Length: 202
Image (tube, rainbow, N blue to C red):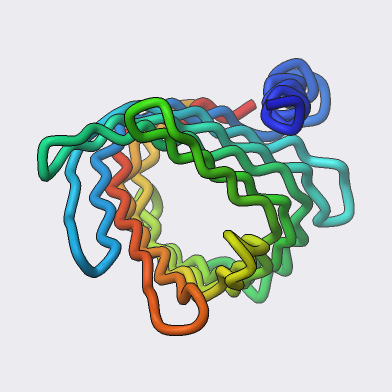
C-alpha cells in the first residue's frame, strides 16, 4: 500500500511539472480484459497519464489507471501505477523513436484477497506522423513483475495507437495494449487494455 501511495504521489506531481517544463496530461476511459488461462473477466474504468519534459530529449512519465472486471461470479479490482523516464530521438519530421524505463505496480483484489506485483518495464516506441494532425505509434516492451508465491512473473507488452491533434494544445487518442505474462512454471496471465481519451499538451 505504501508503494502505491508513493508512486501515485509521484505521478500526481507531474501535473505542476508539465505546466512549467512542457509536456502533456492524458485522461482516458479504459476497457480491460484479464485472462489467466482458466477464466476471462471483462470490465472498465479510468486512468490518467502525464509527461514532464526535462530537456535534451529526456522526460519523466507517470500513469495511474483503475478498473473493475467481472467474470465467473467474481469481480476483480485492477490498479496499475507506473513512474519512469524516457528519451526521445527525432529521426526526421515524420519519424521518431522513444526508449523508456519505468517502475510498475499492479494490484489485483478479488473478494477481499489481494495480489501485488512490483517490478519494472523497459521498451521502445516508434511514432510516425501520417499527416499534419494525425500520428500513429507502436511500442514493444519487456516487463518483469517479480514473483508470486515463488513463481517469476514476466513477459512482453505490445501497444499500438493513434493520436489526432485538434490544435496545438488539444488532442484525442485511442490505443490498445496487450500485456502477455508468463508465470513460472506453466501459467500465463494476459491483460488487454483499450484506452480512449483526450490529451492536453503544454
